[in-house]
Length: 463
Image (cartoon, rainbow, N blue to C red):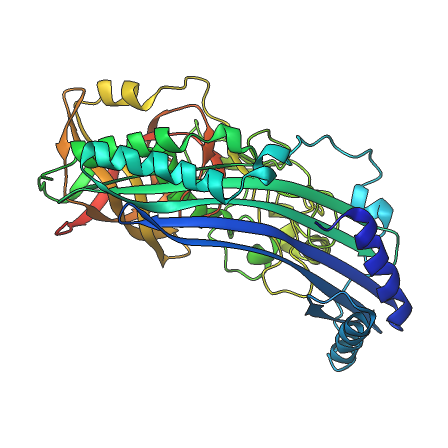
């Protein structure tokens, strides 16, 4: 496994090969292992270890990047030369800032505390333990008469950023993830969970919940499309709301491609919606620095329904300060959310945490308080219909249920929806305790289950 001393050795050798004004090295990689199963049988078992060394050079106000995964001196020399050749043929970028200094990267503050995200137990999980986990899920499938499919994956990941102005940032973490789908004759159920600590995941319990959903949604009935009160489990919330957070970026506002254009400081959501970007939250994951090595700040994005702030890279913050948009863009400063340069995306908040409203209710409580509505396990195939009004479309999947008189009555054929996200988050009647949620359409978040009125289903599927 790559360690800090090896990262410094690579950087020292790269500096010797470089003739650029400045040089920056980003080292990313690790070990990944995965066991996949389908039809109640293991079908694939793979493992790999790989690291990318990405070199960015700056020459006369021009910058470029080249990447290799070889560590020998000749390969390092060639990747440095490739980066410098590419930089020299670029047009000079008037907005390009000098490579970040230590003072800029840290803001002059002591390192912020971040929960340990590297667990030896996770790293030690081998193929036999993954197979045992799969066996426990398949046993649940056999017990219920279902067919199961899914993955059990573990990884160990490092991220290092070093530059010629003294910045040296390092992060390592482990990751475990289990996803299971249970298939019945005319219904299905699904569950997924991940964590840096494998002991926080119970494959058999996930399989049991997925199997219960498949069993209880058998013989799905059809009800007409329309606006319904809908109870979303956390994974469904995470997958749909994820489509709006890419717009909480300074560059997207400068480019006029954000639905928040002319809306920062205005109330767009319900009073009960408050959201942060917080890499230091105990249920979050990821490195506490961005693609230039700048330390991430905790940023308040939404308070009581009002958009308060965006996130910024150094370059986007500097550009914003030169425009009249700065007066309506919240607290404009480099927040440590930039992607590695050069890039066209700028920055994004990727550690979303919903604050909850202080009156958390379980999904069972939400069901018990609902006269007529729909319970949704997950959403999929979500796409934008109108990016400026943040209207998205997609479908329900793997456990959609009719709720009547406070009880789950039966499974339903799935729906297609067309829904404005600001409207959805203005109609939240109840929320659960925020939890770490994982889906397929968006990045992981800390989100609650939600009960939403007037959610717009437009079609019924045939399954």
